[in-house]
Image (cartoon, rainbow over all chains, first blue to last red; front, side):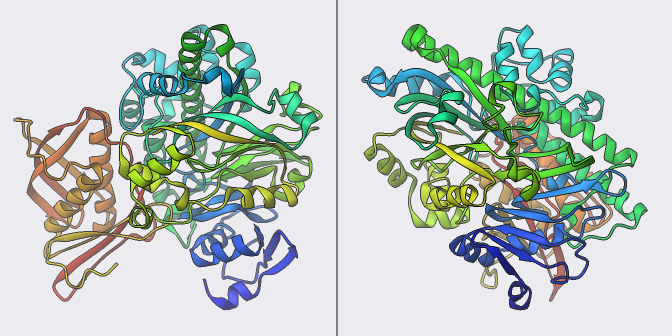
Length: 478
Length: 142
């Protein structure tokens, strides 16, 4: 990114910078970056801002494009990028959603406190690691035949109620009730189905995890009470997505859209922004395939939830009951309404953060705002926040999705070894299960930005407000 | 990451904050494709295991350009690893053209499908030829 382009950026507040539409050729709307000075400097050091300006060149982009405070360089969109497209002349971009369609986070809360786990935490985390396949392992207990996979793709979490793996309350406490109606299993390739058919109920690799948490501090007692997040109580945070099925959907449609763009005369600065007009058959096909993959992801997190519940109640009896607080997606393109405008909002590494008065905020959370979860890295805090009505105007109802990577995986491994990360976590009393030391080093706290700072910007900028902080006591890494 | 001092064919991994950047160099197109497979195998932790699958299979990909062909090739290997729990370790080039690559392969069965690499992407994709060498760069989504 040239210094001249960055010099054109104007601070609109201590937490918001705007880069005007004149800053780079082809920009159709300005780019807005939520960051304090430290995070802004971090973003200037990689290509996140350049990638955001590329997003601003997409046809039919509305109002402005946004980078969340955790934004970092990705491909196509930066991770932490948000853009809304008009339905009539706008596009839908698989690169604006990412490979892990509907990667997301959910929080479960129990009535347990840390003393209830005395002498049991190690075995509890061990049982979780034995019961929930991670890394590349498939789920031997959940191999889906073609008809069952169709139902997962079509119905998402809703299908799992019938199988006794979800409750009606779980659906109420899941974004979009865990099921996008646009989904069409026929839009999903056989390759994608092959990659996903034995992966329901698995975490996968990378930064995915299941963590046992304790509520460390409550900032907004009223909202925390509504969410059932009480200081000292134990909960479980689950982070994963649509696994190989979603990855293959993205691969299939990025390839397809190369030809579509040529037909529509769309020229882009980065091929990974590959897109198709929302009004085109290919655009509609991707929307339906993406929705099917999103449903798979919700069903995946719901299946893991059922396993976690089983492990907790086996180990701890009825006191181990876990209630779903909420489930949020953070890689998705969704059709949403803004002041009478229907838009396709792309969030790549960003979380929907609807406020107290939004009709899509679950009934139980109206008046408070939908829960938003911002996981830190292993060993650091994670946060519960509440969406705001202000975010609708400020960022198309979006907040960030994590701390954001600061180091490449190779740099992370050169900086510290996996066994050192393991020792550091154990010294903090955190029980860790991870298939490899290399992955521990890649995903250690040193590889990520300061989550406290990221959350502070989200709060101060009014995108979501802090409700509670969670502290990990058990980590199961993918 | 420089490759100036590397023998060919060779691969290295470049720095990218969010993903993996695979850089490959070879004197022939076939070299580049085999070395790309070797790079992927390294990420899978399957670099040293000899083939234990007696059956040979043919893998073929096509695309409009050699750069797109490399992406197709890597994505096919990723698909085979994840859906079939199989990683090719012995590859024999049958055809290496700018729009088609075909190889015979034997490989190893893996207990857990290597899933840490989601896909090969078109982001900053490069496949150059200069001074008698092919050099390609491809970003892998992690």
